[in-house]
Amino acid sequence: MNKIAYCGILCEECEIYKATLKDDDSLREAVARKFSDEDYPLKKEDKNCLGCSENYDKLFRFCSECEIRLCAIEREINNCGECKDYRCKKLSKPFEMDTTNKERLDKIFEGRQK
Image 1 (cartoon, helix red, strand yellow):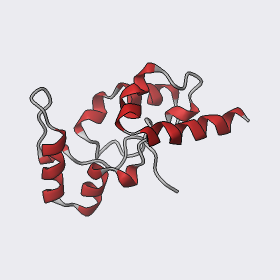
Image 2 (cartoon, rainbow, N blue to C red; image 1 turned 180 degrees about the vertical axis):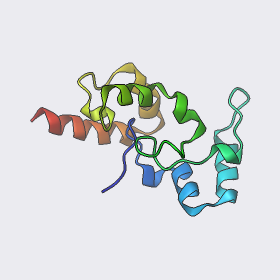
Image 3 (spheres, one colour; image 1 turned 120 degrees about the vertical axis):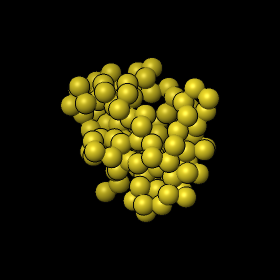
Image 4 (cartoon, rainbow, N blue to C red; image 1 turned 90 degrees about the vertical axis):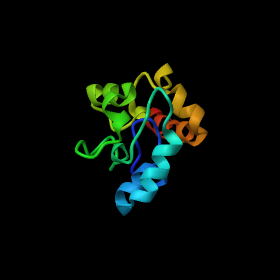
C-alpha cells in the first residue's frame, strides 16, 4: 500500500522521501537547492523524511511546523481525507502544487461518505 502524507502527497513520489531511502547526498543537495529560497534556506541535512505521518525521527525540516500535519495529529486522523472538515483552507498550497494530492484525498473522503 502506498504511503500518503496528511496533505495527500504520495510519499513514494516525493524527491525528499526518495533521497532519504536511497541515502543519496547528491539528490539531497539537488532537492535542497530546488526548494530553498531567501526566506527558507535549506541544506542537505534538512532533507531527510520517511513520511510525516509515521516516522517522527526523520522528518523534512518543514514538517515539524506544518499546520496540516499538526492539525491531523491533533485530530488523530491518517490523512485529511478522513477529516470532517475536509477541504479546509490549510490544503490550498499542496493542492496548488499538485492537483493529484486533491484527487487522492477526494477519493478517500468520498469513500467515507458512502
